[in-house]
Length: 99
Ligand SMILES: [Zn+2]
Image (cartoon, rainbow, N blue to C red):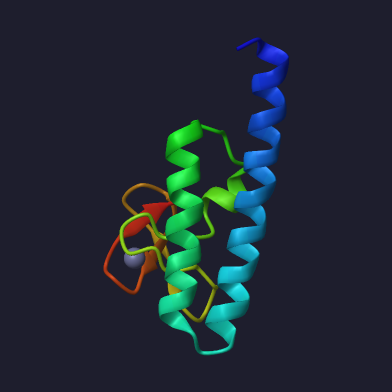
């Protein structure tokens, strides 16, 4: 496969990931937590399969452990990490990540 074709595939994969995350957010806001997780799982599978790079704001918009969509004040808590001098977000499942 030539590299131009690859680039096209990657950009379309990226936009479907964006769409899936958007749908996951909507589903979560409508109280459909399980459906929302399914969307995230699909997005994450695409991400792994095609090894696309995502912008930071998308990378930090879901949990890679439990597939919960991350919505500030709702599904994650943010805390300042004194030891590492950074901001740390914590998902409902206990997974935490440095920002
Ligand atoms: Zn989680």
